[in-house]
View 1: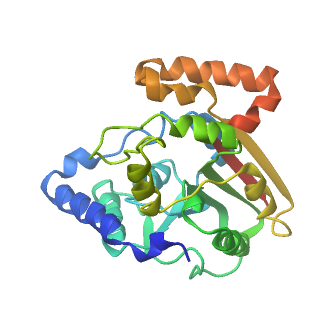
View 2: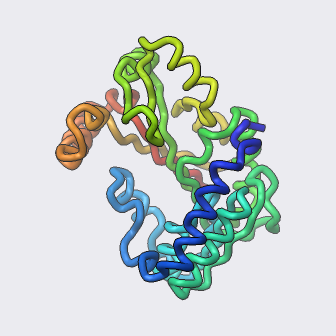
Length: 270
């Protein structure tokens, strides 16, 4: 099992912080818009999910529950799962202040406590890349088991298919030192080694996402996002929408560029 499951303190801190803040400022946690609506994959994700009213949906790695609650407000019958006790407690509190009947359970996605064919949709956003290759297969096996005969599974994952692009982007530091999400430059060897040793995720490829589902699903669709939008790290968020639009154009008329995408939406059909 990946070391992510062994280091729960960070996630527990997130959960406790939100749980305490909800008690103090409940009005700040009323969800009226999608918490992930700004992402380039969002419109396609919603197309795959709709119509969601009365559909049974299982969100793997639901975190603090924001997207699960949002989908519940759209009419879905949502169950969110995560492995952190305080994270699940915070998600339940979020559902309560939003007055939605959204279920949250603490469990391991490699051993889901649900019956076969229990759900119409299984959803996971940036969760599989925290697992080892063997555990990805186990997670997809569990996903297939709990899906009904016409069900679909949708995963959004960061990918890196090109070693050249991987090295190129790692030459440039990301964020500010001391802040969450900071990544040093590959050229700073000591900092880089420390950064790599502390990672709780890994690079995935579209090929892994395709082959890991072998014999589990009848079909696999992969949609790519993010090529020039990688430059946002240099240009800032001001040009985000323009870069996304250019990416869509490039992927449509120059399909081989999808190999260099930064993120994919994978749809598995039973």
